[in-house]
Amino acid sequence: MQRVVQRRRRGTVDLAQELLPVLVVLTSHPIQYQAPLWRALAGEFGQGRGRKEAQDRRRERRFEVWFLTDQGVRRTEDKDFGKAFAWDVDLLSGYPHRFLALRGPWNLRTFNGLPLAQPVGQSLREAGATALWVEGWRFKPFWEAVSEAKKMGIPIFLRGETTDKITERGGLFGLVRRFALHRLFAKVDHFLAIGQASKRFYLKHGVPWRKLIDAPYGVDNEFFRTEVGKLCGSWQGARGEMGAHFDNLTEGQRAIREKWNIPLDAKVVMFCGKFVRKKRPMDVVLAARAHFERGKVGDATGEERLPEKWHLLFVGSGELGSELRAVCDVRFDAEAQNHKIPRTQNLGAPPASFAGFLNQSEIAKAYAAADVMVLPSEAWETWGLVVNEATAAGVPTVVSEQCGCAEDFAAKNPFTRVFPTGNVRALAAACNELLSLAVERREVSLAADTFDPQITAKSVRAVLMRA
Image (tube, rainbow, N blue to C red; front, side):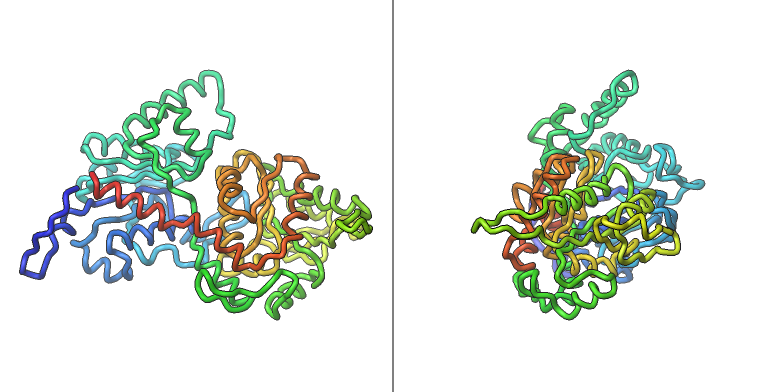
């Protein structure tokens, strides 16, 4: 897009600003991981202001997020967590947005579960959209929006949370799905690849290299630095100090460990997520057993020493909660009233604390207590943003090779280790390797800046300005 340098005197309106594209982002609902990206885009389009001011200056809007439902900001049931909740952080301020009207009940578990009251093409035309960003292809309105934008002749961006690590279905269903995706992808101008596995998925489906844009998946790194910094010591921006080596616990960390009955001298191995089979939380328990069963081992001097004292920290909830507790020596349980585990079952099992589901305002406590965070999931973990969170909080991470983020973090973060999925001895060895590092939280956290939402926002704006 050509830059116009001439200015009008009346109100000193910059014509270049007037010619900025009107980018519409279509997504299912407010998500805590996406809000930082929308704010970064608002900043790139000069709209990073308060909600009311943005509404008062609607004529200046060049970017807007359209939500199909209000899940996330309204208390709703999450079947995997086994409870109803809403995120307790602000997901809507700092960027222009609207909620599209539906003509009936919605269901995020089905393709046809979001019936729009007005055709999405009509909404795009009324808004004067000159570019469209669609968050995946899970719902029918996403496909309709791509088709309508193609008819309008405006550039289309697509960002899907998918990888080539998931075995695609065969048979007639798989054939029909691949054909449908091929037709959809043919209409898209730019594909926002969240990582290497995502990039290979698009290439496998015939997308040319020239259409791929690196769009690393990220979280609000400063949020986690700030919140964990309150518990671990001062943190002055990305390059400030936050505590010292992990062996030196602050008063805040000691208080958290005492509350959750974690010994001050233990190495805390943390799992954070839904207790469901595809995330393989039981592998953390099996790794702890493999670690304890090693007995005495020789160190670099040839002397024998006992294995490090591990303490497992489980953050989350889900269908496997009772199974996990049954194979652990439960020292603390935030949901004790829901899980009655006989003490005799736990004798000789790895010590563990169950902190329960922690919302965004509380999760920093877990990261402040942890020495290493483990994500042992199967391939259905299409990324694993908990790894971004832990890194920003200054916690080293161990990731299964089937997780979507594995190779990206392994390549860009010296404090991430990748292990073969299901190999609990390799998982234990990776944890021990990281636990032996003499590293400050500040140093670990700096690696998170490689995965910053601002990178994607700048890339998208640059593409639109060249159009």
